[in-house]
Image 1 (tube, protein in one colour):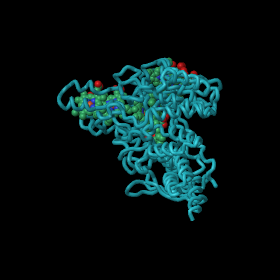
Image 2: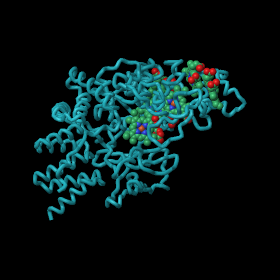
Image 3: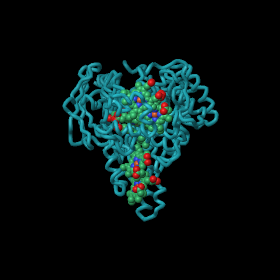
Length: 553
Ligand code: HEC
Ligand code: HEC
Ligand code: HEC
Ligand code: HEC
Ligand code: HEC
Ligand code: HEC
Ligand code: HEC
């Protein structure tokens, strides 16, 4: 009998360390008119911008300028013993997969892509309105298909990585998440592919309405980032280009989402590692790197992303060197660089080739390729993380202990001293605000990890009462209940969690076990079949299903 001790579900950690409210629509989302409307009066900007990778960063497969090659679209993953093949169909790209040793085969339609294809593309498939990331991606440099980044460590075919609004929000615009669910969207999941005009300029309805009516006041109804004070200006790009070691959603983010013109730091607290040693070099976002540059340190607010980048267009390869050199020349006299005054005319032109060298490793999703720390001489290596490091806020804004506590909890991993720091800070935060959900959720997890299950259970009950949509917490609470014989309550929690994200296979298997124990083999069988629909290579589900079928014979 396999049914004995199969109830070891841990809290499912979020994919990205952001604790934002689920399904949060941007404030004023109903005031957004879409980029096509802007085209009516700003056709040149629209045309230029449409050619950029930002504007093409997501969409329906088969649409847009970039096209994948299907020449090498059949490949295997030897570590897993899996075969994949991608082909074109009318409804999207068809992914066929199989793993012979497990007797698994099937297919999925890849409906949407994420990533312009400058480096590569990931894909999203929809099952009953719920979105999941596909285990295959396209790699542009090598023009071939392969296993998606981050999917290599799995010991079975992996189809249940939820695509939530958190994942889509940097790549797509005017999202249509269904409230209360983790990864459910209306069709289509977003009304505009890529980064729309309004992601940088704010909702445009009033601007358009007033100007159409001949009212000049309409000009002040739209945000021009360049006219904002520096912190608000930088916030516009930082919403998508600042990563940090940890990103913590602040209380305000539960009520509304950031919009251009505001201070991003009021919505999200960003933390970076403090040590200025080698690990600072491994920082992974354009913002952090630029902050380390001598240019930024010496010129302060005068230097920003817009000093070198035209937000509406990317320079063509032939004029690239000249384009960026002109940017450097805004601050540097040609005589500033003795090296470039040498005889090598070609090298002389390209300031960034020497001072902003490129990383050779390009086959990952979110790496910085061009060194934005603008070094005198190319640096050797990224180095390994220093010891005794700590977290500090990225912007020079005051941070609350609560935010720091959450950040420590996010980066803690197995580090017990970080966990202790987190626990102390979060306990204080809970005392101040007993309804602060992100704080309660992290506390419950820390309590569970340190074996204080009764306390973790009590806290989880409070969380689910405050917000029933916290699926991961509900799943855990169910396991606490079942251990204490509260079967009906556990089953209800799991069912509810599964209605918010049907890819939570662990909860589904637990549910099937509980149904079987309660004597309902037919329900258990249906539950397991559903589990395999979403997660076709789930071994436990397969075994249990075989057992139930054998038993009913
Ligand atoms: C009915 C015509 C019209 C439409 C539609 C329109 N604009 Fe404008 N917009 C103008 C005019 C006119 C100006 C002032 C002259 C100029 O800068 O071109 C302007 C100026 C701007 C400015 C500069 C404001 C400043 O303070 O510097 C921005 C930014 C802008 N528009 C963005 C947008 C965006 C984004 C959209 C789509 C959501 C949009 N516009 C749609 C007519 C329009
Ligand atoms: C916080 C914002 C953010 C989130 C969230 C995010 N991305 Fe990205 N992504 C970026 C930025 C910015 C780039 C390009 C620059 C870079 O590499 O830093 C990028 C690049 C990519 C690329 C390479 C595209 C190309 O060809 O240039 C892929 C593929 C990608 N992301 C997939 C994903 C997927 C899948 C998710 C969700 C699981 C995701 N991203 C979530 C910001 C984000
Ligand atoms: C990635 C962010 C971003 C996106 C997306 C974006 N803009 Fe802009 N836009 C800016 C910034 C930054 C400026 C200020 C540029 C400057 O003056 O340095 C600007 C300036 C403008 C201006 C006024 C100044 C000018 O250059 O004429 C207009 C009009 C405008 N944008 C329209 C649009 C339209 C229309 C779209 C979509 C087709 C769009 N923008 C998309 C960031 C963006
Ligand atoms: C809503 C999210 C978002 C905002 C806001 C945003 N970006 Fe981006 N940006 C992205 C994503 C995603 C990519 C990667 C696009 C891809 O290749 O799929 C990207 C790519 C880029 C690139 C690389 C283009 C290339 O050469 O291939 C530059 C440069 C850039 N962004 C600059 C900016 C600047 C400057 C701002 C602020 C004015 C800004 N971005 C605001 C999401 C954003
Ligand atoms: C907004 C102004 C500004 C821009 C734009 C700018 N810099 Fe600088 N940069 C500075 C200042 C100020 C310093 C410090 C004083 C100095 O060395 O000239 C500096 C320093 C440097 C240094 C010395 C670094 C060190 O560690 O000593 C290099 C190299 C450099 N810049 C290269 C560039 C290159 C290449 C570009 C274009 C891709 C560029 N800068 C764009 C303002 C700028
Ligand atoms: C001093 C000039 C300079 C500044 C300031 C600057 N960049 Fe860049 N950036 C570059 C150059 C040069 C490249 C390489 C472009 C190329 O090779 O086509 C680049 C490339 C990029 C890319 C493409 C991916 C990569 O790493 O090659 C992104 C995304 C990007 N920058 C974002 C930003 C953001 C966000 C900011 C503000 C925090 C910023 N940049 C500030 C000069 C600059
Ligand atoms: C062939 C490679 C190369 C090119 C091209 C190049 N540089 Fe340099 N640059 C260097 C090196 C190497 C140094 C360091 C010299 C030293 O340490 O004495 C340097 C130093 C500098 C410094 C610091 C000067 C000082 O004495 O503090 C600045 C600023 C600078 N470069 C700007 C630029 C600008 C702007 C351009 C484009 C017009 C450019 N460089 C093109 C290699 C280059």
